[in-house]
Length: 261
Image (cartoon, rainbow, N blue to C red):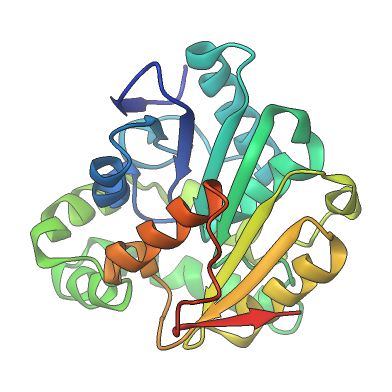
């Protein structure tokens, strides 16, 4: 079974692939699809999510391979611009580490590449016991707010939460928490913009520095006042940063950005 893909914009334009975070689906990129309408926008629902809910999430590498296969079916041998958030950002890292020749440029947002070692077993056990909460409306509404999901999208978010199986949920969380920066990431020659918000977890912010130091083709910034969900919380700012980066327009003039070196 192939991943579900939504295509919008100008099919003859440069191809941009947007990879969503865990627990949501391709709809989180609606504002980006609207902004980048002059591009060929390709938005997959990742394994275990949204309209790809019946496809098991097995591992980061397997999911990255499935994404590339689905994209190749659409664009052939054309290189693509990759944009990924959180889980999707980790998949961008995986693709750059294994198949950089397929990518023209990349934007990596809120991707953790420092494994959660201390207490991970306890956290997974806790997640197993609390999985039923994702099906409770009040909890879903609270979680949606923590992800900056607009009220207009809550019903869609809740419907997709009901599709997420226990096995896929645990596989995603295990893959997310255990993901480490591959050594081969250093070999990628793809220009990459690496971002995180100043209000995010310490490991997420530190991961920006890790990627910048591992690969000289990475440019990293922390976004002042941003939490985990910038494309939804401030789509105008995020869209501007992505557009400027892929069009070689300098970013440092933005007062909200702090360069990471």
